[in-house]
Length: 554
Figure 1: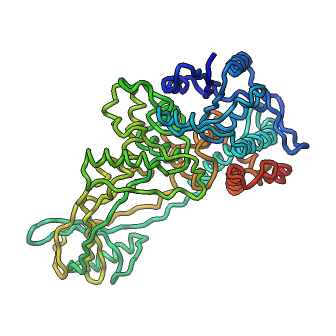
Figure 2: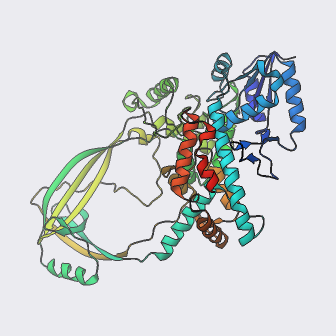
Figure 3: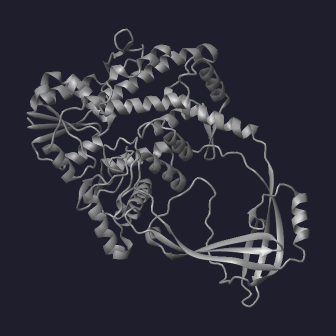
């Protein structure tokens, strides 16, 4: 008979935690959710405050019997499911099926699976937070009602077996709308003129771009305009009008949130969202490291906060000062979004001394890549800014203005370790310009006109769609990956290289849903509902008050 019973979701997590607790503690896994709404019917009593009607999940009968037996034999039961709304709901469902042992049940959470964090959590148990449970239930109930109202329309008009979801349908709409923008886009012509110039004494060259006339910006829209400017420049002298030297700082990005981790892993590693979350889950739950045993290598990976603990801050300082020197360290605090739940920290390594290359042999290829990304991003977030020397030159040519810019890095700072990726083609011009002086004359080597056309907006990638969903306040950290995975699996969208493109089925489904459920398939409604879920979690709104007027109109 175990004095203590600890219940977690997964066997991997159970195996890691077992090693941190004494022999009189038994650690078991619930294998995720054990109760849910029934699949065969709505499962929500709309006549009675939208009361959810939960049942035990099929196939979990034997597991539930075992959990009840283990609970009966333990003196204290610690439910240690994940530290978010979903984890709190699983804890509540476990407490419900173990009702007979309710006097012995308590709730513990930890943001990282390390010995100190787990032991501290066991010493500081709490009650189940019913407000977090209500927030999860409100989302589950609303999603069930929306799905049950929408899906029959698709069965009737398209084919049986199709299904629709609240957040997924909005994500499909964003992708379809973007595709229509691209199809309806009319490119516009524009021109640039580049002057290849030479400093007469040193023979150093630079490239300047046409800016306008008499210091005022002028856009060029036709070849006729270009020819007029080229004719006016035929006998021009190119005189340096202004030289501006300066410095600029580039600050590091904050520690990862779920969405920024997904975006960077997509950009830099080519990981799908699903793969990123699966690999991160393994790093969080535990990897076997010689001399340390099985340890969680990163903090909890579902978070929208960039906050880090003071203990982690101290560890980062020690590591940075020892590795790079005092002048590379800066104690930085990051502002978390006003909508962030901020229940736990940003994503970071649990041990500063476990550098990626030190433990590379104990990780698989994908684990190493993602761990290195998380580790370097976190360390860089506590480092000094990079410093650039900059130069901006303005050149006059017969009343026409040309400009050139250059920069060289003077101090790499955080960029020694990590540089954030981008979705676009932005590139900073590296390299300093010749050391020119005002009134200096330059020799023209060549004028090159270049015709271009405006481009349509880019299709979404998984990374840029996550960014858009987050910016529009649609979904939360735990929903981005399943949302995009689901609409890919349903064949509403498909991937062309990394781009997300709507299928014909996706277009038809989107048209039907937007025509029939205008109030639901829109960004504003979805964002408003997410904020109301947050209010429930923050105790500002009870579940049954969650704008049930909307539910009646669906």
